[in-house]
Amino acid sequence: MTFDYENHNEIINNIKELLLIGAKDRKHAFHTPIFSNNNGNYSTSSRVVVLREFNQEKMTLNFNTDYRSPKIIELKKNSKSNFVFYDAKIKIQLRIKTVTNIHYDDNTASEAWKQTRLFSRKCYLTKKAPSSATMLAEDGIPEHLKGIDPTKDESEIGYKNFTVLENLIQEIDWLYLASSGHRRLKISLNNKPKFEWIIP
Image (cartoon, rainbow, N blue to C red; front, side, top):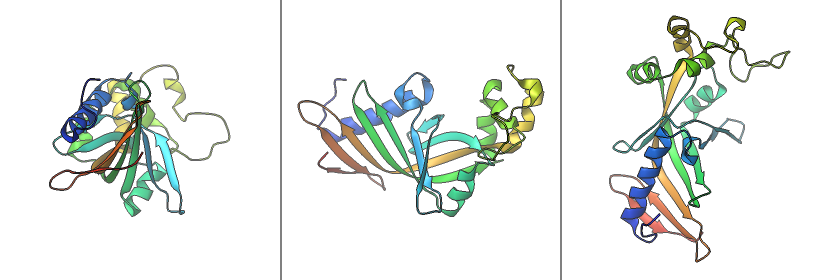
């Protein structure tokens, strides 16, 4: 990377570039961030998700999930959420505070569903809800689909379980690790970005 690690504008532009790449390139470190939310029991639930879209105009991060997942109920009660991205090669960590908007059976969900591959659609065909108990070690996929993708017509049944979580960025905590000296910048996003250097 060749940008100035002490220039606010260059840093935020680089953040946007990394998030755009992360949403498109499944091999990029930013493609699979950790997403966290409050589970209602005075603790936090965290899991790795697949970043499907970064909208740099709206400053939103989108990923898909099953509407039957416990996090849907949790996010309806408390929409505050967080992402953590880390790329070991470039030694940059992003901790991002967001507010989550649930898109279920609307235009956003419909458009995302059209872009979802059959392999991924199969995940939404499970008879049992995510996180539900089971007597056997299984993934819940119907037996006739074991090892194969569903047809397009078969996959359409899964749309009723499909949801897009759109996460509006409120604040970015950018950390760059370097032997010459770490750098950490807090970026608050309101009408206009506000920058504040903080000790790593």
